Length: 506
Ligand code: ZN
Image (tube, rainbow, N blue to C red; front, side):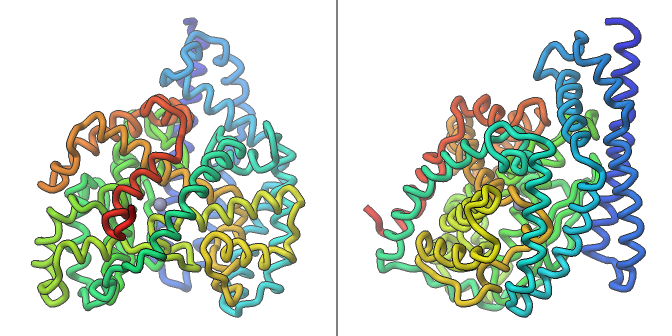
């Protein structure tokens, strides 16, 4: 390798590391805005974040990146596709070319419309007024079409939007997997509804003091492997996880004293995201080999700790006595079996964020199908609420009576996040398939969980997922680790195995 190749590579990496530091300052400002910032500071904060966003965009589209890539793309460094250096060069080429195809005017219009859209949505939702939201939604759809046409796509426009959240994934593949899931999930949920059995969820609605929930949740997060030396837990209205740097991962939750699962599973979920961020290779900080692969893979990490682990009987065999000691007034007269059944209550509902592990994916499927129809001109923005309500009736057997609990319930579309929703279901599906493989590789995980041991699963995830960074695209990574392409069977099998005995299904 000659000197000019080496120096181009080092200059590129240095440029990317500095951009990542700028981005982490932006994230820190975002974390502060949502947790501690006084309300009156909003305007100045917007100035700070707008300035940073401009600087970051400038650095990401700096023509010098193109020159470095030209030198590197045919060099020995890029030869091995999945090597760390090869990943840096390939991923940055992809990102640079994509960003460079977007006209500056469109980028600015998208950003402005997203801010405006969220403000209009907030009011429209509070007042249950879809007509007030429809014009900005129309504008958003039109801009997203322009965005897709500008960057190009392999099969359909939706591919281009999906790519922002799940790089290199195809709409046709997601459609295939979600259709398979739907065909088995709908009858399973019907069987559960017809079983005549349901848990006593009243026991979860007793009094659980917030301060005790915080301590109990923190202990559980620490035990599954979230490091509080390199992270912290705070309280916010909308829980999230923010990776601010190699040794600084912040998670948040919301405490409801009259509903135990809300904060507890929120903490396990965000800790799962946090464990992923903490498991990335810090020597590659800011570079593709040290970054998360996709939103779907990120969500698979949170969902696995929340659902496959946190809602398992083995997990509560260990944790329930601790829960009883922490909340004696609420749980002294409750059995482990009743508590475990209540944790796995399945019932169709209208609100996505309150949905259980099984019905959740139908909420996503509805949004995924509607987004595609909007992008392909098969559905108008005016007809969207009726189409939404009809799908809820068809898939979940429940029809919203107003748009606030229907088409207006999520913030995503108002901020231009179209193509985002399927990553939630991809996360559930990846989680199930990865967990099945971990089970195969690691032996009796239930026995480990029942004795409070979670290290082997966490280390397995670090080795197979976290430390690989972006060296493989999500779909390839899952196939490499599990030995087969994404398949809905794993999730269906796990749900059936857990829910059949609880609901007495044959
Ligand atoms: Zn998540």
